[in-house]
Amino acid sequence: MDIFKVILTSLFSVLILFLIAKIMGHRQVSQLDFFDYITGITIGSVAAELATELEDPWKPAIAILIYGTAAFMLNLITSKFPKSRKYINGSPAIIMDNGKIYRRNMKKAKLDLSEFLMMCREQGYFDLNDIQTAVFENNGKLTVLPTSTSRPATPEDLNLTPKADYISTEIIMDGRILDENLKRAGLDLTWLNKQLKAEGYKNAKEIYLGLCDKDNNLSLFPLK
Image (cartoon, rainbow, N blue to C red; front, side):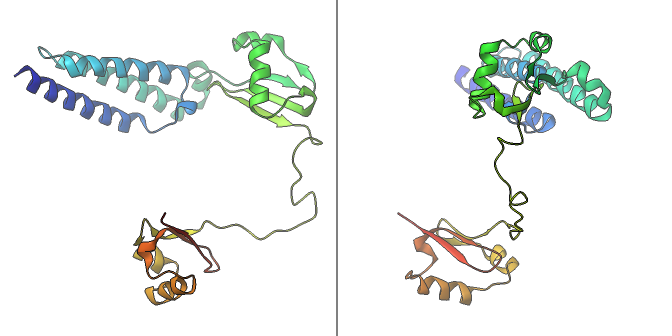
């Protein structure tokens, strides 16, 4: 019977975590601020306890709900009152600007020179002279603005006006034709079968992925 109880409490723990994740929203780890990160670790720890709590599982369940609600309320406050963000989430700090490194801001961000140089290298900047401005964001990432002479050339710099890019539409996935996408692109099965035969394929089952661009050019990736 204990095994049955463990299964039930584990499923209950998964359900609680799912609901809390839905309430808090889906954000990547790199987008989490410090409080969200700590809250996530705490909720995970309490959820593990909930999975094995056979006597009184409601106690850790209530704790999870309280932590999740607190995180949700803080996110709601920061979205409704933008001025509160710098007190709750912190504010970005300019670490370097126009060839000058701000030591005071580095101390506030708890960032030392070795870490700063490493983060610059991760961004692809091995020479600080190539950096115009470096900002340490409140999620722990470094945002770099290169100098005008170090940034990649753009079509505007070359006086070019390239055509706009569009997202290709998935027509075939894992050997299955996506009828809705095919219709949305203004195409039909007759057109698709003709294209497949022209490329030497018998049917869509031989295709792992098929993409169609705005000019109705079909890119096929066969199953292997």
